[in-house]
Image (cartoon, rainbow, N blue to C red; front, top):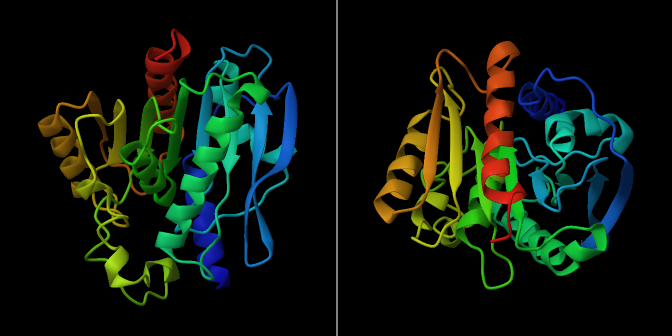
Length: 269
């Protein structure tokens, strides 16, 4: 258990760019978007100093382990998005090892619906919401992008090294207990099977040396988006493993911000 938590925390750390710390103008912690097993499901809201009216759901997930951090400390991970004027919603889901992938998917869908319904309360246009995350967080980002319904649709997605086909991964796993989900859930939680022409513009970023989530996952997703006529872009990080560091982290962060600026910040959809 301890090793799983350390690995998940490491994944979350590696996707944070080496950018200067940005302070949110206001932090609204522990907003409750639902309940499960007598416990609250929560997210934190980070309001920028120069809001542009758009918001980003940030999937707090590595190995489908969703960890609470002091928001005052966690905000450094959202520095580039805050500096660009995006309001950030740091979404936590029911965490592995107690809950498996399908349950995490259901949680973030619930959070997405709640945020769309209440976006105006944080000065955000519900039609200008994007989603991002890395690894399991990237998987959940694609799920939200691919499964938006009327009123809950994402306007843009950025996914770092996301697993997109979980069918072959299903089963007991010491490293990732969340993968022990029911077989009947495999299709609905595999984003590669949910691609359709009405999916939002989606940016994929993946490293060639990733041994945790092979780059073939993003290659397949990119091909599927192209075949469906979805606006998409695929950035390959040469030599990068499961996480970006140094200059590559900065490049990935800049590309993510630019994607959201191009598709969220300038105009309503």
